[in-house]
Amino acid sequence: MPNYTFNHVHHETKNVKETVAWYKQVFQATADAPFERGGATWVQVYIGSVQVTVTDRDFSDMELGRYQGLDHFALTSDDFDATLADIERHGVSVWMGPVELENGMRIIFINGPDNVKIELMEHV
Image (cartoon, rainbow, N blue to C red):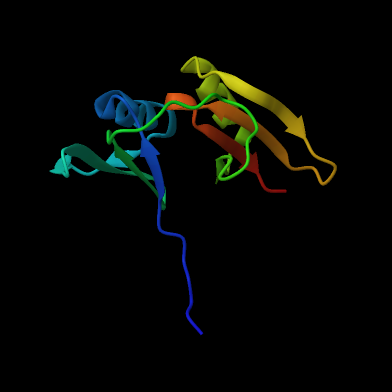
């Protein structure tokens, strides 16, 4: 039976340069050099061990909200209070939260570039 590991999240955007800069600013992400493929710009962005592939291929717009299909991606922070301070300092729009769950975990949903929902969470 095959084994699977997580590989990446793919973020389609209108402006690759601005989107990559946002991930670098908010999450101290690193990025590979941009390359062209199929008439689009591609950049591999790394938030810790999480890879976000950013491209500017043709697409249609979506509204931020709850919908069927892939809803968001989540990142675990080892310092939730510092994470909250960082998103506030960078003026990041909060979609929901912060919320403390019954198990003591804290979560917040932020609005990333192009209305990508990102959950930030703390394990207890």
